Image 1 (cartoon, rainbow, N blue to C red):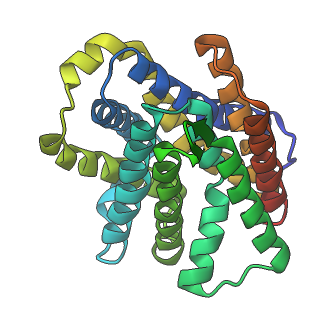
Image 2 (cartoon, rainbow, N blue to C red):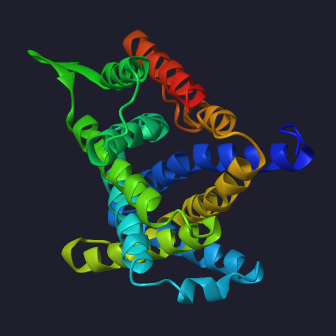
Length: 292
C-alpha cells in the first residue's frame, strides 16, 4: 500500500493529533482543579472502555480471553508501567511544568527503548545512535533549565519525567520479548486495561477526588481519554501501512502541536534556552526515527 494513501494520511493525522492533544487536555484538566490521580484514573478508564469497544467491534474480543500464562503477566506489566505509572508521573510533573515539556519527554521514548534494549537484550546501538541519545538527553535538560536564587539547574519535574524514560523502555522490552506474536489490538487493549487496574490500586493512597475532578474538568477529561484511545488504535494502523522509520518520524511531530495549543490556550512561552532544548530534542528524535 502506498505510504501516502488516503487511509495512511488519515490514520497518521489521527495518531499525531491525538498524541499532541492528550498532554494538553490533561494539563487543562489539572488547571481546572482536577487531581493528578483523579485525572489519571478517569482518562485511562475512559480510554480502556473505548479501546475495548473497538476491539470487540473488530471481532477480536475473544483474543483477550485467550492470553496464555506467558502473555497475560506481560500485558499486565506493560500496562502497569506504560499506562499506569508513566501517565501518573507525567501528571504529577505537570502540576509544576508545561504540557509541552511532558510531550517532549514523550517524544523521547524511542531513545529510552533503545537504551533498555541495549542493557536488557544486548542490542548494541551504533555510535551514531548513542550520540543521538546523548543529544536528546542534553536537549531535555536545556528545556528544563531553571534559575532561582543561587541555583541554576533542572527542577523536580525534570527528574520525575526523566524517571518515566526507563519505565517506558522496560515496558517496550517486555512487549517485544513476550508479546511479539500477539495482535496489536490485543496488546493495546490489554495495556490500557492493565494501566487502569494499577491506577485503581493507587486510589486508597491518594486524595483522588474523582467526583470533584469530573465536575470541574469533564470536557478535558473526555478529550484526553478519547485521545489516548485514538492513539492506541491509530498507532498500529500507521505502522501497518508504512516503514517504522517514516511512521516514527511523523509521530515525532506531536510535541509541536502540543506547544502550539498550549501557547494559544494557556499563553505558555519558552525562553531562548528552552527553545534551543526543544529544537535539539526534536532534531535528535527525528534522526533516531530515521535510523530505526
